[in-house]
Image (cartoon, rainbow, N blue to C red; front, top):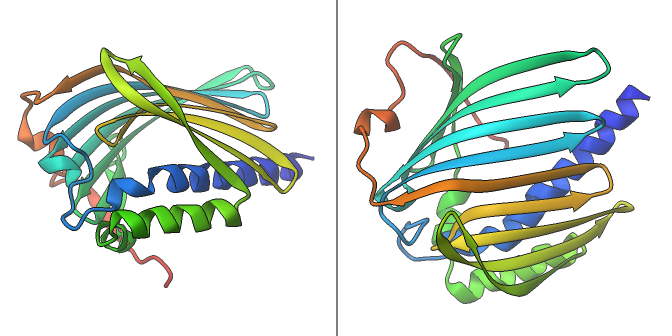
Amino acid sequence: MKILIKLSIIKVVVTTLVIQLVICVNIFSQETIERFEFKKAHIKMERTTTAAGIKTTTSKDIYIDNHGNNMASYETERREIPMSNTVEETKTVIITDGNVVTTYNPDTMEGTRVEIEGMDKFAGMSDDEAKQYAEQMGQAMSTEVTEAGTGEVAGVTCTVQKAVTDMMGMKTTTTTWYYKKFVMKQVSVGDVVNFNEAATLFEEDADFDPSLLLVRDEVHITNLELPD
């Protein structure tokens, strides 16, 4: 039973990630790599996920520079497991430098590094190519994306999109709020996994220590290669 639950969760998580790709693909659709339409920002976000009776809360401090080419996310994840009446906490740092993403645990100082070539692929797309790609992905994943007006998150006005998918017998509806191509809020409601993530603070052109965007020297990094 536990294995079946885990497999169901994995399927929904994969489906949700594909939905995000479908509705976020235009982020990478410019000739020059400017992932966001602002140069610099400091953002605080809170995310809650519920799956198989386990509630996970994640707090993020995000620092962005160079239109998203340089980013750092300092995350604390707290998992409440009712069956064992336990609470687990994990800290993670994610540093993005161009196409290179480094993830490490600040407590153990162990981490991994990977180069994601797909970022360049999306960056080279024209708007029409990106739209066509998103439509193809949506059809393949039985996903319908619609515009849903505007809404305010953390004091800024966002455009809103809704994606509905019915894949492998599991229906998921994901609503996403964008500000200058950054995902400010996302709510996903599905048969197995539900999550809600939203910015609680957004400071555009914020002044912060540039060392926050760098991997600490003492971190031991293992380089990974993605399959072709």
